[in-house]
Length: 640
Image (cartoon, rainbow, N blue to C red):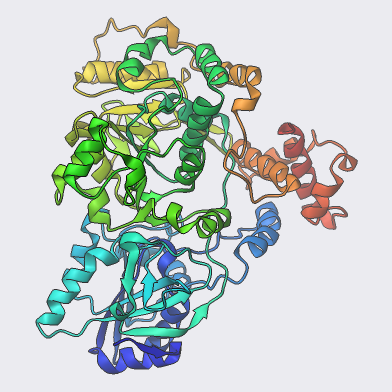
């Protein structure tokens, strides 16, 4: 029988009923009940005889304000978007490396880049596949689970795990087994008034929880605002969109490249003539046979089924556009009929068009989910991560559902021999985590007709220094080269599956930036992996940003800066463009370079609203004058 209580009463119960060492599991991302977590954290911090170990992932915190121009830009935006979102108290301890001595936080995935400089977080990182997280947390001695929930006014005896059934559903049978053996494991829940009530597998009875906090959380939900999609990302998404087969299965990762893929698929469906004209201008002749065999350029007559650990905003946008609409069914005979085209789908009520494990996105995404009619929401089944990320367990059914799967994820570096890097730097510091990337790459090889597609920006620029993201070697890999499959950059597609090392190197050189091709060729030749007589096909000698910019200028409507909507005002969009340009072009610590840049600044009268937004209308002192000049320079350089 569930016990209703306040946050402090819940803390009292946990301390009274659990042993001295509390092992608390929290969902990754959005599903953490932050007020309860903070209350328990603060209480245990004052009790040196107790210990608290927190097992979780993706602890969400507001972006760091930084200083200078960045702070002036971010402060009002963060206040507007994140409102009264309650930060996790232990995050501050992690960032400053000053957690109480009796409290530890172990994560298997970190908010990307946010804890690079935290020795505590780096030392207590657990490298584990997402699909193994429940197993590992349970084995560590889990005795408390705390989760944010959604409620349904018409069904007071039911709750929804909403954004995070992913690991909880896998844990529940493990917890039941331990309870049957006499162990005490407590489940604490708190309802958030704005969390969408997701039906289906995410629904549980209210008695699944021991303690239910009797006050709803009404604070602002954490969101991830849509960021701008640049030229590189748009062209990466465009190339990847040609590999998605009608009637197939789609998984998309989070981020601008995923948004770019969504935009390209929307264009393929709704503006097919313009889409094909752009592709003709890009010139896909090198990959025409691959595209014909594995993908397509036509609109989606059958539609796609989404099977993605993260139910991203893009999948909902694709569903609204009628692209993600292929339904799958919960039993083998029905699924066999659906695959054969003999099923009367109108007579079925249990068809699912998206299986997701967790969701996180912009506030508009949560709002859209909340406003969906119940019947439509039933088509989006939030479920256990083991169902999505693995084939074992109901394997026959999963194979029938996951036709022509395209598992599309991102990496930040590739080696010329085909290894991908997505989670960690060479020196061992973790940017994020493996998450489920390996799971989907493995499925790309295990499923008939499936492909793993890794998206990569071929080059990057920081502080005026340009470097290649395709390198000869790197001191770490996330995806080993024996699992290499398809790689996509803004310059094209490399099909690496089953190819010799020399062929893999040539394919990746063909989609690398031409500024770095000679050096990469020499490294491969010096290692004996390319013949000394090797010459790259001349058609790839013009892999340059300038060529792509000219293509963009001829097809402007197919390069929307915010294809999935925007949380920034018009002035903020201009400012963000200018700040990103400044960051890429100059080392902001080098005053001489900044001084030279400021010489080209236009008159302040050209951008009155922008300067007002950044509190630089009337600069005071040399520092603010320099800020104003730099900002004006960036605005001029990125004006649209």
